[in-house]
Length: 92
Ligand SMILES: [Zn+2]
Image (cartoon, rainbow, N blue to C red; front, side, top):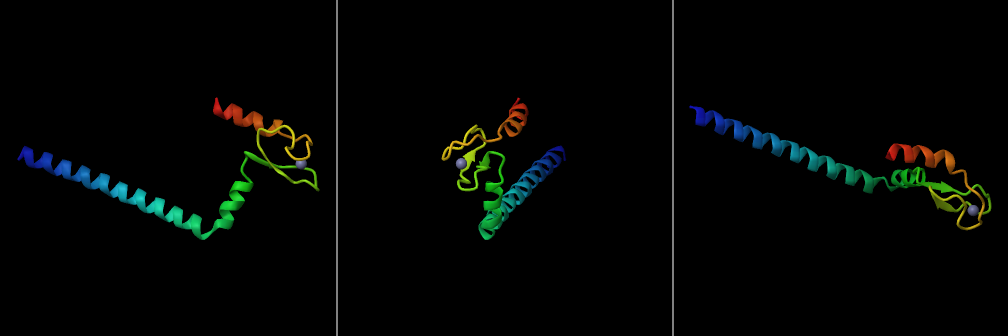
């Protein structure tokens, strides 16, 4: 009788793990499909990411990395201090 209960517990654990794994796989697939279907949203997410900043110069508008202090194309100074400091604090 005890062996049967242990067997049931093991089977239940396996079924639970399999269910969670299948749910995770389905969620991953759905997320990938959603990303493929709406590339515009993904683009918007990457362009508005905290690591990327657009140059203030109207004629330049070059995309620079978030840690850049000056524009890599026109050399104009970028307002990075407000963005860099919180990210460093969050990393600590
Ligand atoms: Zn620039």
